[in-house]
Image (cartoon, rainbow, N blue to C red; front, side, top):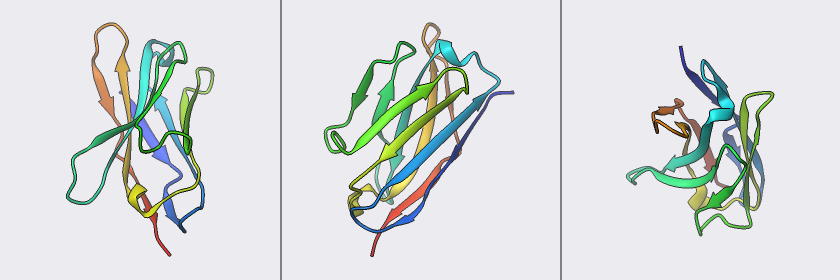
Length: 117
């Protein structure tokens, strides 16, 4: 059974930091491209950052320089380090795994991030 379990969300003040983690099980993690998406209230889900199986990264323009995605193929985890957070970053953050050949996707359940005074 495939599981992607996100953790690390919470309430933080503007300018603060959070570290989101996604633990994967039930898949051969090194064969998957990983990504973080987010969905704000009343908004469409959007790609925040992605990292290929080879470690190549890509970021949405709104988060470049503030968020960093990384992966650990031994621990089967992907991490999103979020710095200089803004109220506009408030959303539910989802972890996604996509097989690099078949493109079969798996999603986590999401973790809430709220940036507010």
